[in-house]
Length: 186
Image (tube, rainbow, N blue to C red; front, side, top):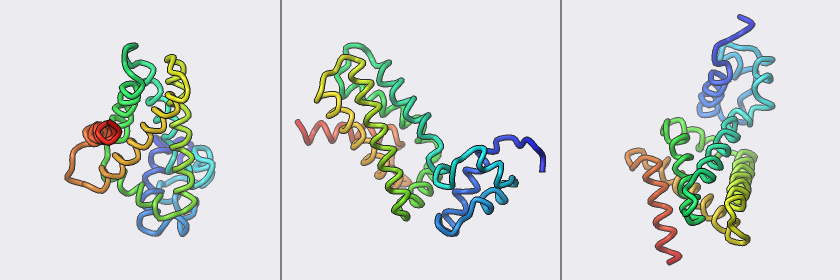
């Protein structure tokens, strides 16, 4: 094998997802993922700490995009409008590959350890949004309430989107969920 492989990280993510879907997360080894990607286990560990992290590798980028969009929202935007801008950014990033998102979520849903990791990721996103809202001058408890509500919208919309292959795109689904939240709290 060559010492340098183009897009090793992407190839490892794709190989892992294929194996997790076909064999199951727990039955798949790092060595098998690396072999499927045409790489070594050593290369795997250069990119990921463990086989769970293959599924969560984009978390930092997602958080950065959410916070950047929230902070960049117009100054006159309400806390929930700023959160809506963050949700739009999430939809732009996550809504690109419906089938891959469905497969990834099915793997996560089938494993308690992965579900726990997903909840930790959502809590981190909520904390980051609340911090961003506080930087915008939103006081507590409003910053935390808006951030938590945004993550609820995110989760409900994402679950709906992956369960409806012929439904609207993720951006529309998120906006619809945000509108529903406003309707049920109004």
